[in-house]
Length: 567
Image (tube, rainbow, N blue to C red; front, top):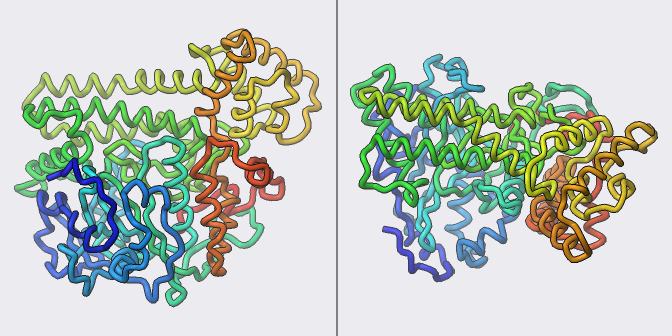
């Protein structure tokens, strides 16, 4: 039971484990073919059940790098926990010999894969879809802390049945990126999984494909040795659209006698974990499903509009990287846009379908996959099926409304103006504008064009573009509610809460993980400090270092201008 009065700080590891409450493994089915001791670390097909019990594989001689200062405070965690041997063991992958842990085995889950709305099976080594899932992510704890349920998951914690022959490890490079990005996205006011801790090892390296130094290649060219790491990410649940899909497909094909029941169980668990505040438990299953689809649509459309607001591109927005709770999950080949380009794509394998401005369409594809997974539970109820299809067909309208409201706020307008917006987008493309800096400078309500020029890549020599900019500025000023200095300051303050001053640029991350590889973790701590206050002006020194356009030497460089899925 959730104890709403539990507000005290957590000083010791025992106090943390006393709050453990394993709703996922207690309410859902274990893989009937699994070994109960957690020794399920070799790739194989998993035909049924919601999870496989797996013991994580500890990294050798773990080295503490960092923890999320803000998230520790939110959870009420004392920093004394970082001195606890059991705390360090658990979050570096060693669940053995922790006497007070109620559950000494973790769990991994399977999920299906849809790419841009198309179902795939070939990515599974067995060509069936039964071997795809958490290949290196293992949940190790579920606890109710200060009235809220959290699941703690290790990324890079070793092999599972879903590892597809890989080593089950994550490298320091990708772990640093995810650790910093999750907390940055949270500070930007966007729903996301959170970062707890980051550990590495100098005693264990793995080989990964990557780029040569200063290469312009789109594909990795060399194999490199990298230190392993484990980052602990925390969320209200790790249920994914792809996970719901897996059970939807099995029910649709009647793959085993409990297929429909297991779909119903995972849907009800999703509602309990993510939507219990908006969906009454006493309703019929059909009504719950309709409310679930409506609420997920609302969250997903808001999420993607917010991504675009801050310049975030998920990169790989498959259904298995889409949280069914409607928050940001799985920071793989993500990126923050610098020089504005609607077709910007951080991932070399992402194509147009996952590009920056196409993310609303990609979200729609994932939503359709989600709705498709729900339908086997409604097969005998034509009226409810039609209601679900109406919700599905309404997605684009809801998404458009969210996008227009977002753009109006970014521009400080009471109402979205499509002509003003389209003219601006064309100007931003033609001028080569830094997305973050432009909107932040616009938030100062500039008197003329000169104030915006610090966001331009290169000098503004074309007189025609200057004329177009001046004309646009005049039109924009005629639409904003600024009559005097007081109203100007009020609008400026409002816009600065929408348009961040700092975003996590890839060259910041490269610096952080390269230094970490050499044993210097200070850049990680510095970036955490700065990027968790993205709307604040901060000091002049910080501004000069971080409120700057992408250096020209970095354009086109592999690993900075674009990344692969290597992690």
